[in-house]
Image 1 (cartoon, rainbow, N blue to C red):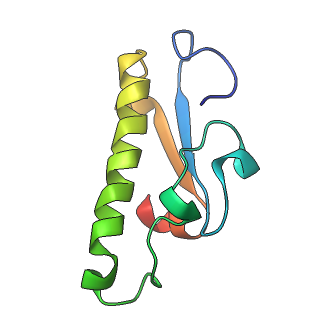
Image 2: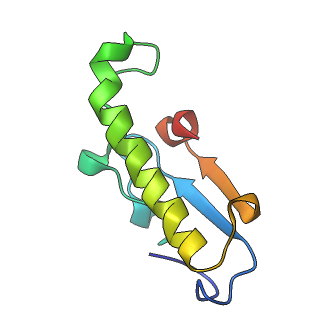
Length: 91
């Protein structure tokens, strides 16, 4: 999903990560969607093992979004990461 210029015409990009219980549609069509509307199930300060599988999966989602921009010609130094709540923790 993307908003604004087509990826092939973009000079920069922004990846926006939604909060827990939020949705990509709720922010804008650019935001990747977390599985089950949560990037990880426990509080960010919980023991690492409680969130590890979800955090790894969420970071892979972020990596895919970055790769999609890069394949369209938007280099990593031209990308801004922005997140709300849980999305901010992943950034």
